[in-house]
Image 1 (tube, rainbow, N blue to C red):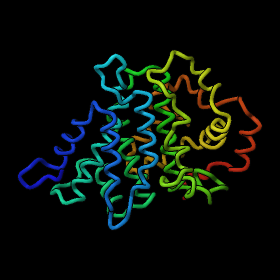
Image 2: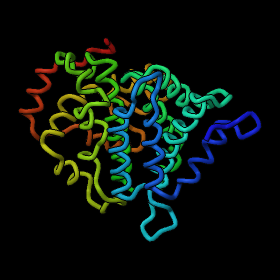
Image 3: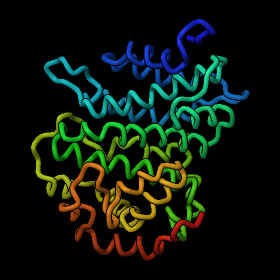
Image 4: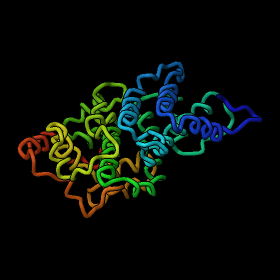
Length: 297
């Protein structure tokens, strides 16, 4: 797989590898998993793939990664964002294992940093840089998706940014319970699946039935509602600003307006980020956790 001096550049080789699996979701999954089968600086990194692979299995199960020329076509947007993540890891893999060249994206550079020093912190920066780049690069594809799909795009981004914040800025993420941040946010541990795998947050079919957003919100799991509205919602603006700093990508902060995510969901319908359901439990959680601690680490 490595590029030699007379062969394609690592970037071009990565493009070819990803193109070969583009319309085969199962091979996409294997390519993603294979990246973690190597040892990085003498350390086993397979544990870092658990949430990413779980999320890709959801993508395959609900059909968003399916080819576009079938009776049940996949999502151009989800396919493109996933492809960018795969491409960054393949290029980083090639460079790390000896191919000559330099990273062509910030995400590739951060994946190289992870391979040179595999820690939860370096993994989050690499993974989320690739995801954010995909979000920004493919915003033109959002219009092709239905309204509920657009809502869940913002939900998914909010969740991965919060998961990173749990580990990197636990006081911001959990206030008085900051001591739990590194445990809950470690991508190698099962607890992180709650935020990273998103299987209990996103629907299991694509495209979504034409159900109103109010019904979707009403059907949300009780514990998820308390977490979303009691802990995450009051911190939304801080999360986006801190992610912009952590990823050195100022455009991330522009995906939130007045404390409301606006990547794909319209600001005019911002009421979805507030709720009058489960008021006692949400108020109790907010009282225990406390107000957002700014950008304190």
